[in-house]
Amino acid sequence: MRFTEVPRRTTPRLRRCGLRRGFFVLGLSLLLTASCRSAGVPSAERAIGTGVVGFEYAAEVRPTLPKLEGGQEYRAAYALPENPLPEYPPQLLQLGLPRQEVVVRVVIGSDGAVLRFEDSPVPSRVDPQYASDFGAAVRTAVREWRFEPAFIRTFEPGPDNDGDGKSDFPIMRGSEQLTSYHDLRFAFEIRGGRGVVNGK
Image 1 (cartoon, rainbow, N blue to C red):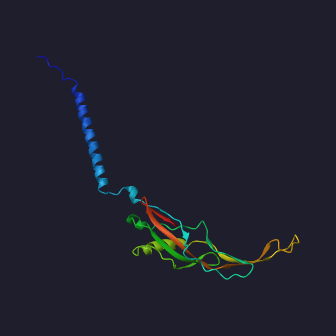
Image 2: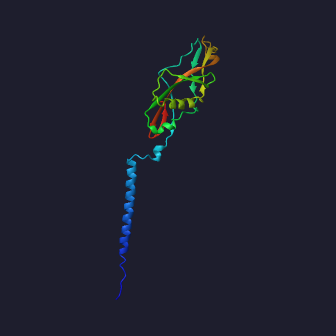
Image 3: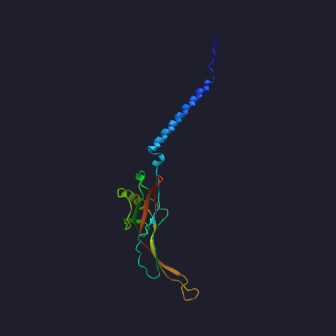
């Protein structure tokens, strides 16, 4: 009796079976991944947050201006652009809090340094439970700020070179730097999983 070899066409069947198993495993993996996402498993992207910051001078209140005499002008203090900016408190990033606003009065010395912080008459809009965290973020950064200090300049009439009986230009007679203050507003928000601080 002669024996014949098993037909080779069984090999493609085995290959097809292997491919089917592979597709099954792949489909099962995708199904499990989708189930995890639908169950709310946090991704690494959601777990990471960074802060971006800006600020504005509160328009609801204006600093008290000094009394000026004739020939004097006043310029208010302003913050230097290289000042370090507050960061969104990292321990609060995952809470998804609504917009929080912190308003603080900053007293600025005649040398441009921050002397102290005071309560602003403009109310902050911040959850009392987290007010200390947001307030600390503002104070930690703003404490190191530098300002161009406020000053009063005194001018007197300059010469009348064209002979029309009027001064052609004023001459500055003196300048005095002053202690002043500003009320600053910082708004903390979560956008796309990131902590954003702005002045809007």
